[in-house]
Length: 422
Image (cartoon, rainbow, N blue to C red; front, side, top):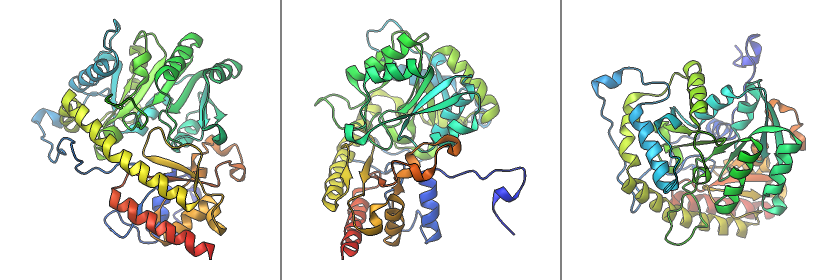
């Protein structure tokens, strides 16, 4: 009996995202999360254990009798208030316009938050960048109200995109919305400071809604010494209920609790009303107990300690992986400003290793998982030929795993390159 959904007339074949594809292929060869022989440099989650200086990991979650009931679709009020207070404290001191609970909606994971927003968009042109987060591909295809328009970024420019270019794209292509990960998954390019201020200002002036995926906003590597290494478009919003800025974030990366599936959308109140309405038919909202358990994690001391611990630990891993990959002959167009990924060009490696998919399959033989770059060539509806992808010679390497895993994996990749040079 076939297991291909396409053999059933009512169903289409739904492609897997890049990370899921990579781990599925690895599973065919025996990969298991519990098998210490495997090194997963394809993972999209950070290491979740204890870090020096970080608050203790939450090991138990209490369930109040009232928490057995459904939670509101937009999330429990206390958590929405706590998130609004966090953003006001970090980014909006001295501003007259402040976020409130009505500017926040809670979702059961980042994809759920993005899906709610996509479902709430109208008949508009929505711009997105290449390369960017793999899950955007199906997200931008399955909802038919808006038209997705790709915008190419160039590696030889370090994936930079000026405000003048932004203005030209918005006006020339009639964009009413723009979706981007910042810092970018996979390139690590971060838009911060005055540049981010200019992006927000441009969206405000041209009435283009800026949809900022900020899930890696606490993983910033080029920061002022002594400053808390975080950034958000929320810092540059003038009026929280009028500026067309929508922000997505959550506990998954910046607090290292991916399994909790607690994420949020921050936006003007009318947008929050719209995405909550979308959530009422898409997912119904998250669970009460885990939302309540998240409240202590948003306390000022906990946020500061966790962020500083992430910066110290992951900066060390970033530098280790960057130097070792470059020594192997992997070209890095831009050392990552943020995220826990390195976007590497393997074109100069020997034989089949010079192709992203070839590198991926050869690495699996060494029990190392990476993600081929072509998955980040976001191509809704497969309107462009996969053969024409500009990123077929790229690979995304994650330094999300622990340092020992990284060192083991990099040693195996060195062996792999040496073998193919012979």
